[in-house]
Length: 430
Ligand SMILES: *Cc1c(COP(=O)(O)O)cnc(C)c1O
Picture 1: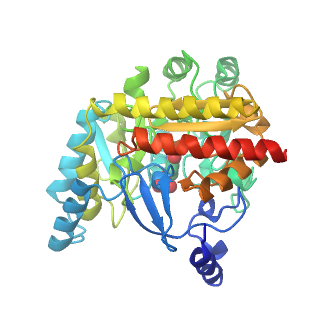
Picture 2: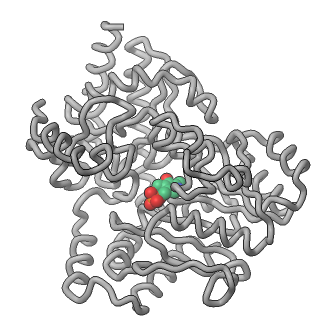
Picture 3: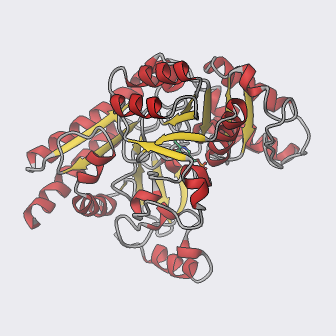
């Protein structure tokens, strides 16, 4: 497969853009080689600058729940663009967005729109600290909540791909206020709260971790987070930037039946445009300016173009879309597992509705340490063989694959056929 134009563009990009990309994970640092430059997408398909076609499992890192160029989104954005791109004044679209989010996820009694998941998580943390008058926060190793100073300790996503455990530029006085624990470890959680009674403002967690690959919470784990935080007076924040409206029409909180105090959203709720949101208990949200003193603002927050795109996505969400998405994800995950084992590999494939991860060299992955034991070298080879066969997987062993409602049995069959061939070729070389 010829990707000359992508190669030329990447060389040109590097002379003006740091690393040639505007977000590190796009640079193929985790798999080597040059990133692919795309020109268009349709449903589950992408077309690159050289005219090659790929089945897409990156989905713009999660937002494309309905595939690319979804006609309702395109129509909504086009119509709004012809009216105005924004006023910096309130619009009815923002009310409809908040009403829609609140209807789908009733724990969000109040919703504040922002422009990225980073902003959502950063603001939710500030609110939790302001509300509780406590400074410490707790996150879990391998979870990622955007790139604000408080949330980069032992973070997943690009920090994992590029091997950056602690980021220079964050003062130690700030970093030390962020406590970290392993995901899925109840006794470590109880011990930490026992040692720091009434000192932790909030616990922030991805209810299904999606930034160290896909890691599923053990049964009872999220319930335990809820119980421990409630007992201590700390707030529980679910970062549903990925899981929100991917796993179920009410997000992970409805799937697992655990209600957080605050929730952060992003990705899917923008339909592909830059959007985030945070919301939750009315009494907590009342502390946000202008009602309260916890300051948070944004020139482009609630931007009408982004609201139109997000609403067009959320209006297509209903409980009926998830069984088929789940079925397609399971078929793909089972098929990949079967193909890998048939070729003689040990693998773990974690999956939940619309997201999956294939880990080589391990038979179970339940936390960050397990992820670290997986063989990223085999993933790297697998990634490139799949890419050349027209399957665009996440360019990192630590990022999940995403499906959309536009993926079909046909794209799954094509993917599995490519995987079978790739895995046999890799095995022969090994
Ligand atoms: C992507 C992501 C973020 C950050 O969102 P941005 O829009 O990239 O700032 C935060 N939390 C989680 C769980 C994410 O996956």
